[in-house]
Length: 303
Length: 309
Image 1 (cartoon, each protein chain N blue to C red):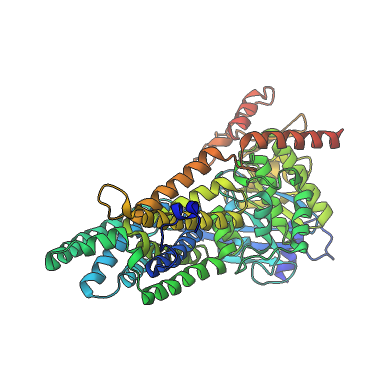
Image 2 (tube, each protein chain N blue to C red):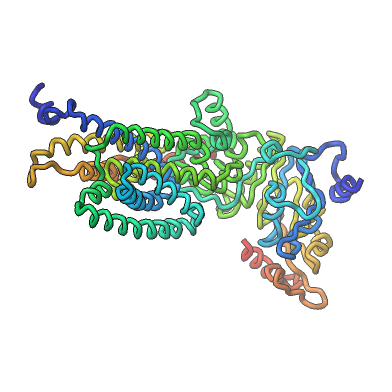
């Protein structure tokens, strides 16, 4: 079968006997005559923490929309634990990017988490001990118990992100999708959120997929990476994907990978001619291994 | 009756039929406006609510010309205007003020025409005053019954949609992610606002009904961080202002300058404002204050650090 063959090619190190929680199988999307996604394929197992890495316009959000069923692919399909069904049946918890919460909104952290459980239901919720205990337990699991009774709108970015995770987690999804959860977080909160998500994936045996601009905050904990550039994706462990040959093929022009104090810098290299196109200008760096400073500067600019 | 009670409640206050109907209808309008208004304020639709209040002048004046009870005009034109706002795009953050402004402008233009016809054809200002400032002491029993039905519909919408409304008020994106039909929810909420405004227009007048919609809700948001309690507070503040307003209006019958009584709408609006100012400046919200949050955060980070060590 073509499908099985495709998965095996994309996932060399995968145990073939387990049904993946999420399988993206050769998904292509065309919008306005342009290939936004081209033959994207990867899969995620229960308990895996996977980063979806790429710069603006690489196709991350479109891919998430396809997974959520909001965008129909021109080719390929998305499968959940081997089954199809409506988004809620599939057990997908999703946190969109850039949630803005009004400080004047009379809504405590615990209220927002409770709405993650039954916010789509009609009627006024009756106070129930089971519901309260589940909310408390979920708040505790994400380290949000200390500010459970504070208004969500006045919490810090990192605290709000914890509440969002609890909001998505309380319905016990098998797949947790988060769009840019690290955007606008300070470095310390960034690290806390990343290790929290990794711990949740392991403890609750759920698949976690988060999109991010930067690969470095995720490097220590990421099980696998889906690296996107110009609508194409490469997936595997970081050692398998973050290599000059793989990324050069992905970007379609020469790319260098610089390892620096346990971090990686992905920078455009120079071939015979400098390959400077409209999509590539954030990656431009002369092939100058002796002096990593320009690379550092560019990596910081991209944040 | 002891003298203190008599000083507060003028003789005949509780036995007068108009007063009883005023307390009943006014209380009902205040409860509905307070509850629905909380969601209008949370959704950033205070201006839309205000516009619906202005537009109910159009409905009220039209029903005078047509010879039907003003309440039908208030509610009918209000719901139609709510639908028009939704079609133009009141649900979008950018389109919100635009949609409201267009519909409000058109509605007030018609209101000017209808009020002009009404005044010139009957050579009385009765219609204008009734529509603009309400008629709480002259509500008929049948009108009160219709008002009760409208109020029940508005409260029903909000009760059924309580959780979806709350989540989509907090964040439309999160609500959408949970599979809530955000636009339909918002449109139904606007219909509830239009109905609530029609009740307040009947009691304290079309142009003042925003006060009952927005004022108690704004005060309630200062008092609590619990959504259910905020809705309750808003209703309580609205009812208190309305009943106290009716009482003062009844008392004011012997007050200067005219010795004819002051309009009840004035008292209600003044009391709502007083309630808001009291909530704003005199009450420190228990969970909302930033200083309190700082202490919480210190405790939380102390705990985290302790766990890490």
